[in-house]
Each structure stands twice: as C-alpha cells, then as structure tokens.
Length: 68
Image (cartoon, rainbow, N blue to C red; front, side, top):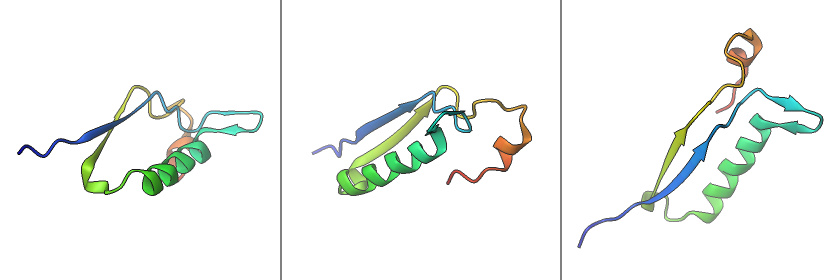
C-alpha cells in the first residue's frame, strides 16, 4: 500500500509585514504551533510554501528578523 502524504499549503506569507496589531511573523509562529499540535503524526504531512515569503526584500531589518 502506498504511503500518501497530506499537503499543508501556505502561500504569500509576506513575513515582515506589519499593520496595526497584525504581525505576519507572529501569525506564522501560531500556524506552526497549530500544525505541530493538530497534524499528527508529523510524518504524514508535507508543508509546501509558495508565493512571497518576505514582504519587502529591500528592507534590511526584514532579512535580520528571525522567523524560524
């Protein structure tokens, strides 16, 4: 029997974007915690990230921020 994986697709994360109380890096950490808690066993899942990862690659502070 084939070992099928479940796909978790994250797209256009725009890490570094901040608007009022929204901070995408903090949101990503919450998503990571949720996945770690709810998607078990972890070996059944693969995470695919597409789209824009960084909100503005020209801003040095966004490259310096630790997201992971």
